[in-house]
Length: 139
Ligand code: HEM
Image (cartoon, rainbow, N blue to C red):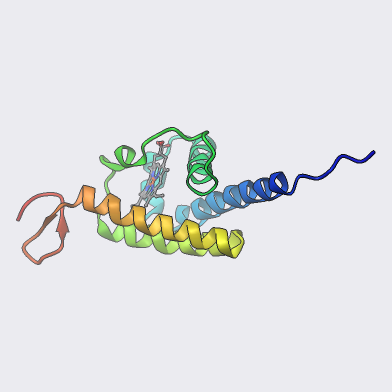
């Protein structure tokens, strides 16, 4: 007798595959981006394990799996990044997500990424500079 196909497992496996494709595409695009590429080059020592961690993060965020147990904000505190890097990051993420994920999943991923982009920036740049722009230090 043929085993019954569990549609939940099939959907979950497809979603996991889409997440991995999205993460890979994001770093392909980010790696050649003039603003983000040099930062990724300098700060990501080994790409494959990093892709795995980030895919696990998205699986946790979007599918509720438990392979990712970290806290992403802390990893970004000492990076040489400014608000314009976050603007580019989210631009590239939107492209990668739309290219690789079914629409409902990409919409959730983009909404979550937009929210985290805002939260990271509130944490990293809590002050305003003389011109009213977000800053790490008081004016
Ligand atoms: C300026 C924008 C950003 C840059 C340059 C950046 C860069 C990096 C780098 C260099 C790492 C560590 C790599 C390693 O140690 O192997 C990292 C980790 C990570 N990033 Fe970003 N990132 C940015 C924004 C974001 C945003 C908005 C998210 C939101 C989803 C995010 C999600 C993650 C996650 C989940 C990790 C893994 C954290 C862990 O190791 O526990 N990043 N990122």
